[in-house]
Amino acid sequence: MASRYKRLRARALKALFKAHTMIYEASDGRIGASAGDVPMLLLSVTGRKSGKKRSTPLVYFQDRDSYVVVGSDGAAKRDPQWWKNLQVDPSGEIRVGRKKFPMKATLATGPERERLWEIGKTVNPMWEKYQARTKRELPVVVLTPVP
Image (cartoon, rainbow, N blue to C red; front, side, top):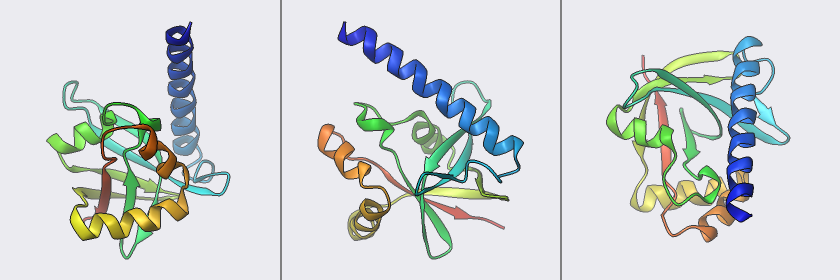
């Protein structure tokens, strides 16, 4: 029964994320830029296997001129697909509200990761709960706009 629930939950979440992405794009960023009290951006990257552009709504926070996201994937055992894709090709595009621009992704490590992780836990307290439920270290990813 538990595996059936997990499959149903995964399908529902996938449909929710797809709908969120469609509404965010169709409204030109007017709808979907936040979910409750957390800010949301759309990250678009090229699929490492398919070569197709994929967009994912993600909670973020700003750090100077960059945007920071966390690869929590709801405490899944594996990293999210968007992060796996960025490891192959770190370039992509982000939409933050009505603004859209190219970006380059880097993985925060060491003291920078710790600093950003502390900020991130205040923006989205669920990240800390997800980290406690999985053995992998959640990737903290810095998305830097490029000219």
